[in-house]
Image 1 (cartoon, rainbow, N blue to C red):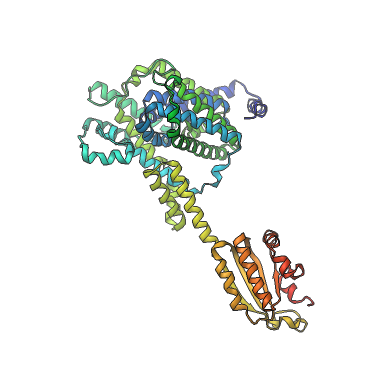
Image 2: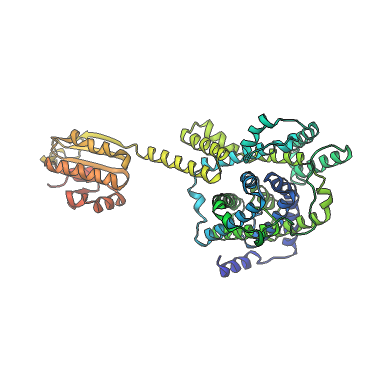
Length: 541
């Protein structure tokens, strides 16, 4: 991160800062904290860690990332998407593995920012992003069935846990179901105008906690909330096993990839809302630092969160102080209300996560893709979603991008070739047409000449045999790769051997450059290139 530019941008951000702007930042910070509190607890539990770990992440990482981030509006902390992939990491490697993988991911994020990889998300197709978001939503919902129904499952992944219900049994705790169902219904029917003042998730959790305590319901609770910023279970050099690093490379890449994608997409969305662009590289460095710090205190991975970021913007946040205030308010809440938070039923947090999972889906995009019947987009969406559920984020995105590239190549390889004999009557001066063009053929080529359609190029030789001349109209030829150039060169050689003059018309500079590099220009001659077919036909030969 360029410290000089950061300080310059910081000075610009706080230019003209006054008590009025601070009041807006304070209100925005408190409002975001009210939204973040139940989510931090829920995502901590949902990740397979503890509610305290989620809360510590929102405090430590949230503060650091807001201070160092690429824009004033980014609010970071534990998210549902991250909780989804952490479940399997916790099951396989325990919390010590999560702490080490998070620090490794933080280092990768810092390096990504230093090497200017902030624009990488622009190369991930929209259906792929929507697909992995929906896949993560499914994983979150499946992962909360235990807490929602008050049962215990087995397995390393959400799918494995669901399958285990058929072997270990499914003894439902109806008190837990009642509280969880209440939270879901309450959040769905809660008026939107009230939600802008007091978040539905916070109200639902308060009501269910009161009910569980007053009625003395036998349901699992959050448990002890620490009164210290440093949890007992945290990353420690004493417990660092260098041999574990090789096993944690893939999880670390998954955490880093998700943090990168989610944070930059959140920033892109927020930038449209505020008109203030996100410094992507600086944001990645900040995310990296936040994720390096969190495990040292006992926290889990953090990313920017679009819900909390949008709340901050709508609440009038003026500077990055809003995000820092949100973390301070969460810290005060932890110290003052820790004993109350300990009584929150896990089934209530499960209800919050299930509603969050439903709302995570980009329903407007999904409806658009399927209602318009975009087959390629549908394939990318479904393949990525299924891969996310069955494998992990990095594999899912890789599969989605590969499918997108294959479909793109198939689409680009659709080369349209049309033949048309020269008709003198269509010219302004038919009598001036040179004799060589009396039995000439015009070949219109539209599309990209690629490795996938070289056969179409080579097959033209038989169709053009015996013509007095051939004019290739290539204004619609958008691109030519090396395989296409080689095939076109062979076609030119064949026509040359048949002593058929060749003229190339309307070719773009990019395609002509490839022709020059591959020897086509030298074979047919620079003087056989024309701006248009008409220019070629009226030339003296």
